[in-house]
Length: 512
Image (cartoon, rainbow, N blue to C red; front, side, top):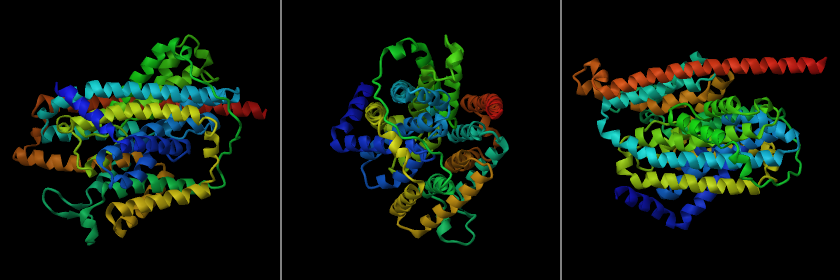
């Protein structure tokens, strides 16, 4: 009965036209940002989260989840049209999407992409509905040692988001932890890393930290590329309505791809890049025509995009039930939930059950609007890609400044985003990734506070972190997860090296 009441309460929040308006607006914003290479859903949510402060929580999260769904899909648009993925999660789509465009099937590739993304997003939303409450019931078993173990398991996922250089990924994650420690200690009241500045006693807030590391860093990176952008040809693409037959004969590939995306999304710190490549490899392995993959196979596009968008609902499971972000976007949503007065974690399902069902319903609605916009806008997307960088980047930086200043009305935060953006840009130039840093930054306070609480509650006994079967199980899972991701990273790097070698051979052959 409680489930039905909470479900009804979640639906009731959709009675306001304002919620529907912001869902539609969020999907549109997400598609625009996702379709511009470099300006991902993460950048869009980091930019627009401060603008939701004045909104009630339901329109605010309808807007943010709309951006989430639209942005994850839209990265496939430049991947198909220009062989330039809008986000790392859409890189696998280039393998078959771009050859389809070269064969004159760009409209079909775009249609398959948005329809597969819609199917994957709705599949993961249904999984969120059925499994998130079950996981949330375990919440009462969690104390400070278990929370610390969960947060450390999130940090072990650095192995999955560090890219090709694990050492640099670990260094980036540790730097994020140091950023989280700036300011006053929540337990002892001592100040750290303030350098005598009164303003730094409050530390670095989530919003300026995330906007500086993501949005401003992206602006600086794109500004450096002005004059060197890859040019694409704008042509008139035919509209290709989705056909059920395209999906029925590969229903098992589609199901496995959605399942892979949801499971990978539910593992903290992984994200759509790993899921898309895993789904692509599995689809190719089980296909009746694996020789067509890489030459314009519709199955390849369907597998990548369904898995990519299935991450959205999957990543919401650890966010809402454990307070652990599943990827960089949900790391920002974690901050948004806290700012709107809700604490994600093991009590979220019981304290905010109506919000959990609201999330589930909004994800389904957002995916349906994303599907409609994707089909109707297939002729306009190439024009979005033609916006000059020198016009776009000033607009983005102005939005960042306005959003951060609106959050706290202090020039200190403006100073922070400039410094963090410059630091992030230099780190990217040095081969470091922002994802591990953000992971460390978001989880830093959870790790530190629960570490201290566990030790104080156990009279400084370090064995308290292994005092319950649950905490021991979490530590074992963290070790297994880390080992699995290290193996997958090694396999991915070997595959990349093989692909690069093949491309080099093809280039040499063309020159000859």
